[in-house]
Image (cartoon, rainbow, N blue to C red):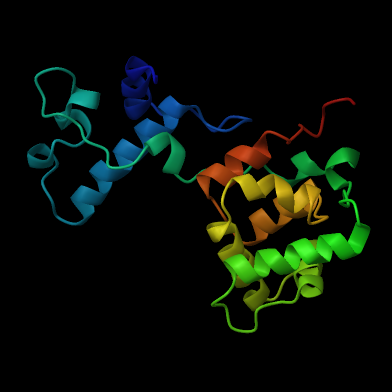
Length: 200
């Protein structure tokens, strides 16, 4: 359960970007601040809509009940940590599933078929693997990886590494290149980030 006193504090005084994924309270405060700002930009009335300090979450008792239609802490976009945080030996290690490269290609073929079915010029398994390994991607390839990251269900995040033969570093690089800020994926991969100045 979020600490709503902390949410209120973060609404008015956002925490500076830290070295890890923001707390749930910081994400909820950011989400409510964005709702308030969007209301102003669309020429709405935040008082009538009970947003920010005019709603119960931030304004406290006696204000209209704040209603979020999604879990802010699970849907607010998150910035991934810098790529250098995955530049360590274990993160660069490519794990191959039993069956080796052929099994990894089979998994990537299944992944492309399931999550890139409507994409023009859908990549082959070999090409998809190359896209993850490439430090520079063409715009079309970036779009394909962005589509894949957007469609991939959370249980398959780990499988990209364990069954697809894609390293954590390659996943993080693709995340940065595609400018993906998907909450669930960034939360997952940030768990494996290590500060560059940390001794092993």
